[in-house]
Length: 125
Image (cartoon, rainbow, N blue to C red; front, side):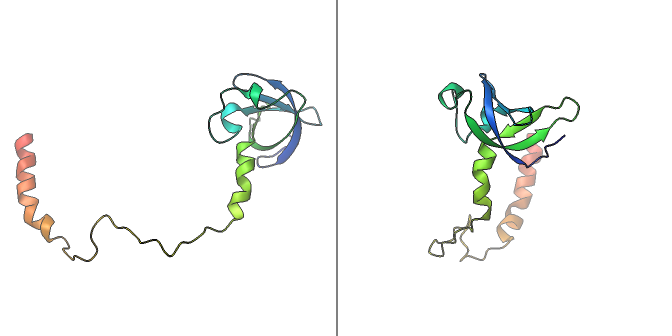
């Protein structure tokens, strides 16, 4: 197999179906871009997005070595530039906690109510 998972390849759309688009590479190999891997969001009709003969850059997602089927993605390729961008840190946002961090109750309320909760649970059995 000339291709490996993660390879970025340019091919030509050779066919469009309801479930995805077939892409043919220069060496004659063919792969499938499933409709869910075309772009983020909902794609209702690939005929509105692609045309047969259109050049398309894709990334190889998976290769079935037994059947030779190649799974491709355009969506993952579009997301790749985001992996090297630094995350923006906003120091102006207040951190919110699920509890009030000014109060220091600890486990006292749990210990105080524990016996009642156990008795209630045993009554329900």
